[in-house]
Image 1 (cartoon, rainbow, N blue to C red):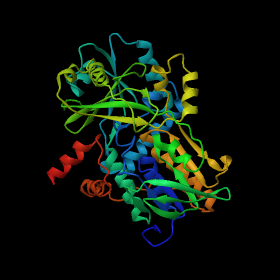
Image 2 (cartoon, rainbow, N blue to C red):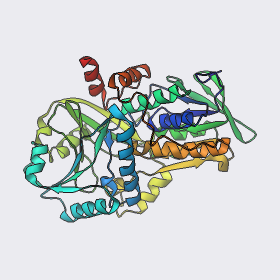
Image 3 (cartoon, rainbow, N blue to C red):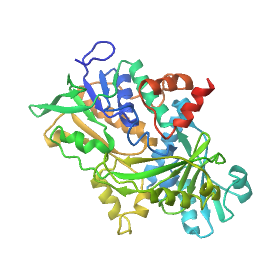
Image 4 (cartoon, helix red, strand yellow):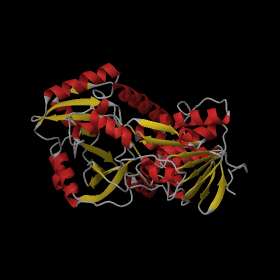
Length: 424
């Protein structure tokens, strides 16, 4: 029988060791709930660790989804306050080229101000001082409070904090069965062991559909894959965003001595099995090189593919709200809102799925789940994750030890973690 570190049987099983799942475990543990987090591999192995690692200011979504943008800037500040060495305060720029639409740039700037995102239009001289390699075709630049998240550090710190508060963290422990009795969740098989649970939270991301199916529940997902390309280019200080409708190759993210370029968006049927096209890698580099020509000749250090955990009904709605019949382009500019599903309506009480969302908003997603779970369990405790720093997050060495312990190494920030280890 799996137990929490203080010997209690788990009341709640959280499936999925990304930022959201680890955040749920931390939030519940802080409220005194006995919780086990189970991940089939190492932590952050899914979308979290294979993202480009941007701490969004909300500027990307300001004109299309002001509510989501306001949520982003609030969580941006919260993570800066609580996540220590898991965050880098790089700042960000939205870059418009001569061929880009001035109206789009103006609309983004004005929308940011309306939402409460601090923005400033920079002179080209100031922009080139910040990023010396900017293209001569750059015509306008907007500064925004973007930043960088080190995904493996964040997830490891969340899980470490949860464990400090009594949670059990199980890696390389796939959930192969969910047990339903009398219309309610009763337990699961985790790493070959039977586990009793009053509540199960499906935070499996792009794999949420398969996880839900174990309980006989339908959670239709529409995963989309995207490629990130790490190039040997250290001249980017802030996050760079192309000031145009979201498309392939419109973001460049500084990670230690390299820059991660992204990304594409292609619908896939299976988050584990999909074709990878090398042409996508070249397209991302070429598009990003329109902002910084030096990217085109920089050595490619690595590339990796991630799968976004998009909820199919939400994606259908987003496509319907755009003028793009193909369902790409502008549809990707709409904020990735999250959805919390209570499967009591499907005949399985005590079973919840959390889908969609963004890395930046993982904490508020986790809080929404914890609120619902505590309501079901009769736990009268408020969430305190927004004002409580992650245990040990100000000590990079301690966090990186947790990264190793939880096998949370991810390609997004592997160079940062390895470089820090080499310096110690």
